[in-house]
Length: 381
Image 1 (tube, rainbow, N blue to C red):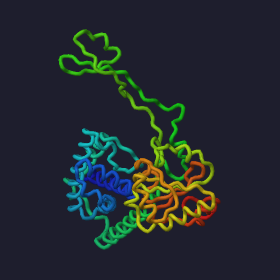
Image 2 (cartoon, rainbow, N blue to C red):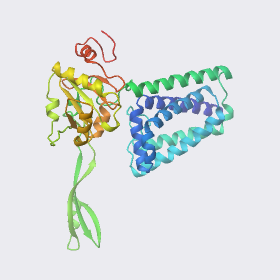
Image 3 (cartoon, helix red, strand yellow):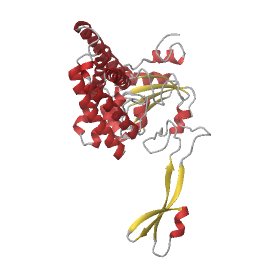
Image 4 (cartoon, rainbow, N blue to C red):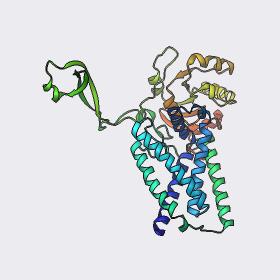
């Protein structure tokens, strides 16, 4: 029992720290997942606090893992772990049954887990935590109280700094298809050897007041007692999907301008402002100056938003923004850059650099990236 408890302690501690840091690397993305859960359970009050809750959960999860590895605060930690894992096992079990949330977000976009996989992961964790709970008297602090307190304090400071830094200045590791170095157009296209959807033709008939589905090979059983209702194509096995399936932008008249953007050669700047009403205040002057300098330098400036363009106009005039906005679905906008507003510099369709609302660059800084004098991490070559 002692060895099993110690192995469980190490496994759970490492997993909690890893999971917490992956989510802390992208708290905005994790907050989107929390909003999904809030909306499913009609907890709309919490939506406005999703980012703060996401940051708290990340820090809390890491600290629980650190305490486990240090063998510190065992009693309270065991109760916290047990309550948490029971709650999340119920939650992921619900998702596995209903499929209302297709990815729990446990490991962010780094490791995608299907609902059943996420549920089984929590079942395994539940078993390990129950083992620790009943064998907690085998867990002793590795260091004395002073060193343990210092270690916990340092871990809290580092974790908090990392979480706030990635929130303000974008994820340190980008797991999304719009990451620096990726070609957006290539990510929108499937390779020639990609697996296609497997589709079966299904016929819907009514018999004895009940509707039934019949495949092509079952049609032979149909007689006068069957009433034909409809025919449809049914997905049997889902094929490969492009990494970016939804990059489409439209002007105020509904004209699709996706190809106009993608076919432009050279450098271009993309402003992502998913919701202008929730956009970080005080960035408008910097964005206006940057757009003006881009125009003077012949660098196309594309502003994309999910806000209705009729609602954008008052905002645009109020802030004297001399550039047009185009509409795009919120999902790709949230994936392009984890900031509102955020910026992407492209060369042809390759992402060269991203900036958050807390680091909007001057055009002189943008030129350094265009001239190749600065790398993606801001390091001069």
